[in-house]
Amino acid sequence: MSGTLIEVQGLCHTYMAGTPLAQPSLRGIELSVDEGQVAALIGATGSGKSTLLQHLNGLLRPQQGRVWVSGHDLGDPRTDLRRIRRLVGLVFQRPEDQLFETYVGDDVAYGPRQAGLRGTELRERVRWAVGLVGLDFERYKDRLVGTLSGGERRKAGLAGVLALRPSILLLDEPTAGLDPAARSDLLAQLSVLHQQGMTMLIATHNMDDVAALADVVYVLEEGRIALRGRPREVFAQAGALEALGLSVPSVVSIMAALRATGLAVPLSVLTLDEAEVAILAAVCGL
Image (cartoon, rainbow, N blue to C red; front, side, top):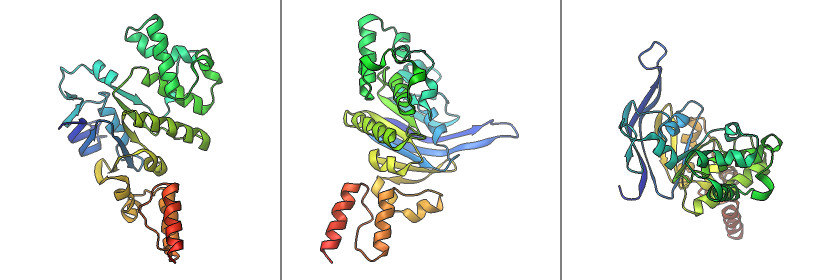
């Protein structure tokens, strides 16, 4: 399919398969992500989001079904997984836990150094990655990792993945545990990556993050795709989401509350700017 970077067909996965403790995690997943698109995976804890992400950079091989990434069949034992992991960067739920060097610059440089970069080329790659996440290279390259704030550690962990210049970025709960300022800052950096054409797939419980970033949403329930569509289409089904134990973005909740008072506002808005326009239009129309 032209323009499609990720294609998943009939993907199934069972942890501890063949034992009395076997636990199905994915049950026939069908998913596709186009180049430059941001896809969001939402679902209750245990719905299979993280397991799906781990299939997309080869940490897990398909037990049943097919997974293609940039034209590579990840179920084919001949596929070079090292090459896949250079194409697909996976940022775990707490990327700061991936930091293991003493200094920020050394940690960000680790991946490119293993790929063979040295000297000026390595330094410029680190400068590029650190700047991409909003950290000043000269200020942070010699900072002790242990002195960073939570938000700075999250950014440094992301920079270490970006330093490999992946074509696809997978993020597992990227804003979990961040304070509001750090969360807003990180979302702004991810939005810049989106504008620059980075293909991303984000697993998250935060519906406001989805509203801010996603082009398409997949809702998982017990390892199956329960809903899919554009964010406005998915969040318009508040009742279905509630039945799955999920919420809607804050703005959607506010608009629903206003509508319940009799104000004729739409439920399809996702941002504060859109809400402002819709509320003014409704008030002026009274």
